[in-house]
Amino acid sequence: MTLNIFDLKGKVAVVTGGYKGIGRGIAEGLASAGANLIIAARNFEGCEKAAAEINRDFGVKTMPVRCDVSRVEDAENMIAATVEKFGQVDILANNAGITGSAKAMVDIPDEEWQQTLSINLTGIFNCSRAAAREMIKRKNGKIINVTSVASFMPVPHSGDYCASKGGALLLTKVMALELIKYNIQVNAICPGYFDTDLNPGLASKVEQEVKKRIPARRIGNPKEIAGLAVLLASPAGDYLVGAAINIDGGVMLR
Image 1: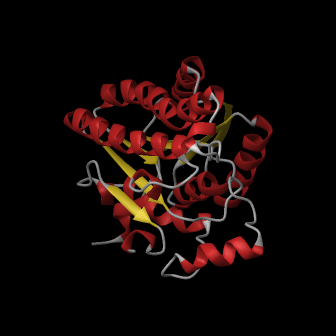
Image 2: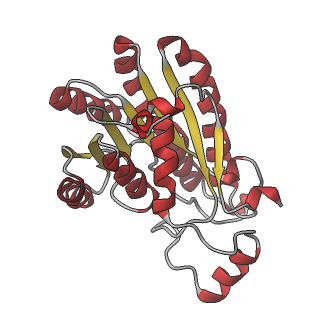
Image 3: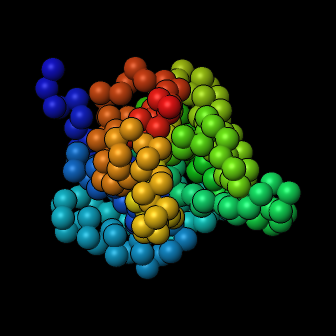
C-alpha cells in the first residue's frame, strides 16, 4: 500500500467555513494532497485571503465564494459556481458552524435557537443536497460533515448546539445510507476541544480546567484535523460509510 491512496490531484473540494479554524485546517490538508479548493463562508474577504494564501503555499487552484449556508439559494449558487469553474464537485466538507447561545435551555431566545439550527444543521442539508445532485451525475463523491463530541453527550448551557450537532450526526447516517448506491461516501468528523476562532483563547483558568477533562491534557490544533479529512476525502476512505470519527484527545473515553 502506498501514499497514492491519499492522492487528491485533479479533485475539486468545497470547504464551508474554510478560511479559519478547523475549516482552514481541512482546506490546507486537502490542498496538501493536491485538491483544488473552493473556500466558502459569509466572510468573503476572509475567503479571498485564505484562497490566495493556499494557492501560494500549495500551488492548487482556489476560488473564494460568499455563502451563507443557511440560505438555500446561497448553497445552490456555491455548487453551481464550483461546477461552472471546475466542471465538477468531488468533495464537500460541511464545516461552517456556530457555538450557539451558551444559555440555559429555558433562557434561549427563539431567534438564537433558530439561528443555531439553521447554520449547524440546515446548512449541512442545504449544501449536501446541492452537492449530492451533482455527485450523483458522476456516480462518485465524498461528503464530510464536521459535527462534534457534543453529538453524543449533553453539555449544559448548550441545548441548541447539542441539538444541532446531534441532528447533524443522524443526518450524516441517513445521507450515507441513501447515497452509497451512487458511490458517494458520507462520514462525520467529531472534534472535541480545539483552539479555534469559535472559542478564541480560552481564559487561562478555564483552559486549565478544560485540559483536565482531556486525557491528552491539551487543546487540539485545527491542523490536526487535516489528516482525517484527507482520509475521508481520498480513495483510502472508500469503505468508510456513515462513520463518526472522534478526534478529541480521548474526551469520549471518560
